[in-house]
Image (tube, rainbow, N blue to C red; front, side, top):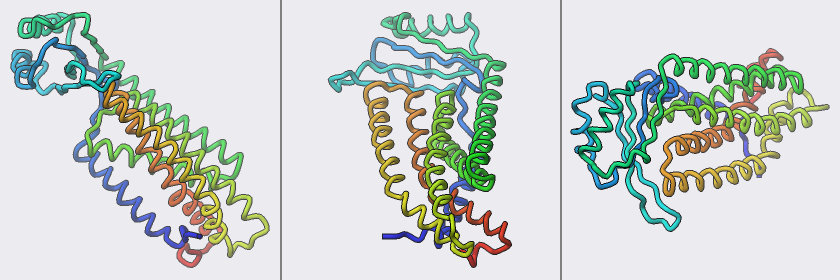
Length: 308
């Protein structure tokens, strides 16, 4: 059974445009929920040692002006038997000086005497360090893109590189858009996930464009559209099976991290991978290869409509 991917490429382009534009609008209106890794600030992870409510926590924090508007989260994991573990508290706020942190801990201990200092974990990142991490993250993405362009141009041709990078940028914008809509925190593990998605998406795309290069030999230029469609179909089962296998593992990890560990950083990392792998598989089929065909048509001085 052969699917007409090239004949339906305009529909795919419209769908991709809706995803990207929707994400950009969300980022423009709602922005990105940047973690302290990039903005600077203090995160307190602690176990109060007894039951508590969000209202009680907010009451204790009320005298601390620097904590007004701070993000407060109740987290809970499960042990290996599946039983719920003791609830924990995560407070994310602007940078708090050590003296004020001590005052905060005294106030919490006064309200919950069972609070054990040994269960306290503090993460603090200054604004300067946060800005440096932001620059390093952007630099890592730029370097990755530049190296991919060089490699693909050398291994295949420049138009393949342009199509591949366009698909990667498409993937990044979609993942960022989803995180903006959900207001999920963007932190260093998120950047690691994006770089991982880079590699995964490029690998999937290169497999297809390598098949295109092999099939296009000794074929007339008028047959390019048919060759691209044939190449995508030849790799379709492989792409789907590889992606599903990866997604099964990632979903299992997401369930495990959420159900047993409750680590927000790990959940963000795996969720970014799930979205990235899914959209990466889509873009390698519906974006990169058809886009290369469009670039070829421009080179040949023909319109995309007649070739499709």
